[in-house]
Image 1 (cartoon, rainbow, N blue to C red):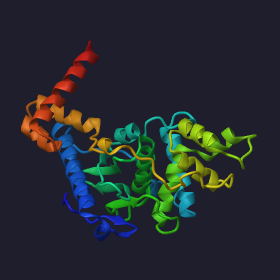
Image 2 (image 1 turned 90 degrees about the vertical axis):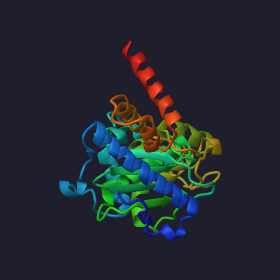
Image 3 (image 1 turned 135 degrees about the vertical axis):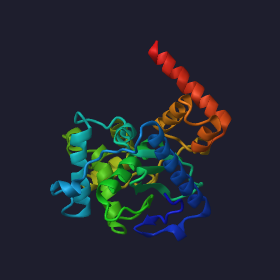
Image 4 (image 1 turned 90 degrees about the horizontal axis):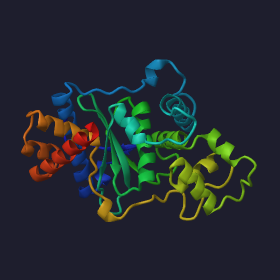
Length: 302
């Protein structure tokens, strides 16, 4: 792949990104290429398996963009969530489909929440701003997954900015609706709110529902607002993203990526130095990773 693709956010956004943001996006692209290289070396191919709703003939990409996002989410919940309950691990779901997910340390104050990249030689890849909280990152993964399902004509490298107002980018409206319905299904929320005073939902209720569904409180507020069951406003505002301390904001590689590198090294396909370069770290760290995963596999086999 060519590193340095122009990224889009509804319209070309490359000129609106800072040099630091562009640098992290370039590193993300490089890591995705390295991940795909290891797949070919160890497994023999880059494979991914996701539904093609455009070719299925199902009317899921009809109606308003919000309706499309909601319907896509319902279809995917039926396929991926075994019971009508909270989503447990969306990252694991995406990894099982062959989607590469990495968290990158965007500079402090960046409006970039995530991004999406697809090429046939590397497969679908999702970038997350590592400063987002775990619950925000989970929502962002679903958001980016919707872009892969629906925004394919053509696939363009896309960055998504937090707090984009509705109506500015219809593809964002669809992805936002998808993430909300995927994590907080209308029927489940209505069932939990049954018999309660919907006009007086306070912070404790927001927090309890957010913990149950595994989402930030703003997502509960937004879904209630969409259903006409209350205001989408809550203390701090619905578009405030939960963030972690700066010392946690570092590159977070998928476990499958590291395991592929460790296996390639153990089979003599790559050296420690090569492993370090592929993971964008040092040979010493690569050795530590190899020892850690090898010890874990030995423990599992006992």
